[in-house]
Length: 554
Image (cartoon, rainbow, N blue to C red; front, top):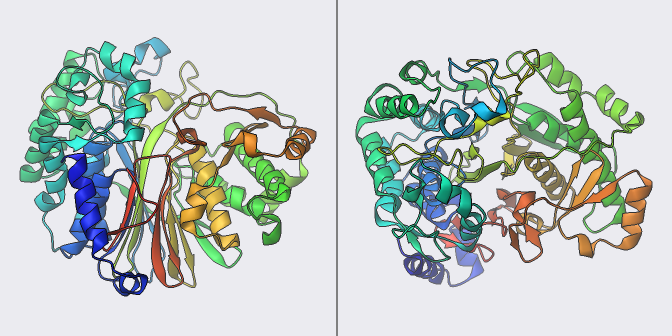
């Protein structure tokens, strides 16, 4: 689809809304979608219009993002789901990927290259699982894949942020011998803003998935092609790995009470417990000390982020299956008091990976809500694709510890990789109020926690909150997204508290905003209206009943 056509379509939809009251009256007609590409949001709202529910829309969005935001997610990655059926507490669906059965315990860094960097992909199985169990039953699997096939076959227009990502990784894409030309222009150049990318090989794979179902990815011809490509390129994923890949596991989400709200987030292997720990630490201060733009908030937030991230680094939850006792202790009042009253002199600054991901949020007309974070773990994943399938493999093998066989996260067969993903849902009196999540490695945790706190404790509204500059800490190094706007007196206060000032290691900026600090796509119930927010750091779009939000953009 050409960019001009997208704008024409969105513009024509917007023109149908003659006044605010008319749009408000339509608020329950379809639902609300916030995702990181306009094409995916259009796919999701179209499914809602056809009578699908939030899960149906989520499946269509997921596959469409894999085509139109291909550097961040796709068939070769993994997905984590938090689903809140209307009137019920959320359900966590652990869609982790697993290391291959032949993963060598003695692997070293040089062993991880291209195909060997990939864990067994979970996204296709996760989408199939949630559609079969929680979908409306009104739309077929093929109908949900239709938008993704269309954008792969006809093409889509690359947005400004997606172009910046291409530009940053131009060299590694051009140097890869493993079919990254599938994701470039026909003459081999990276696309500029507005250039159209077609992915005909991927379109063929999606058509086969639509015809034969998700099982083909794990037991059929697609599985055989993956296994053959791996075998020919020294990869570790086998046909047997794909055949025996388990269904995603349903878990009880982690939750805490923050003020009078219940905040739910994703259990291990994900980062939800650290997100909730930050909120527990912030809850020790009254809400009026945590308002945006005050020195009190900066100091309290810096302290909470540092304490929680240091706790996660130095004392992680190591059992990713039997984690309940450890997590309960982490989220206890006793542990909050311990962290706040224990001096940490840790000054070691660890380099963080540039992990990349996508997040989208959906609520349907009934109030069913879903938050999904999906990833191939690094921009353009392993920079490798099968010549016959056309999707990028992930790099989750990079997240295991190498050369430390006794480490709880040591590389080994059939293990889950530790993750920062934190899809989060906030409820009050059993009613969903906020659906939120982000990409960005450890910045996921920082972004989700601070925005959730601000939404609960202030009256700013989700659109404004998502667009505000953010903060992050790496041990006692403090990162402010818009550092020039921080008053010098606040900087001095931070230094007195033992913080040094850091600057992001990579620069993907829109004005004073940097994608290092995440890409939040959220939906909140405000004054009885579902309001979506698309992160201005990305190319995202909010659609509510077909009406674009004023702050949505491409």
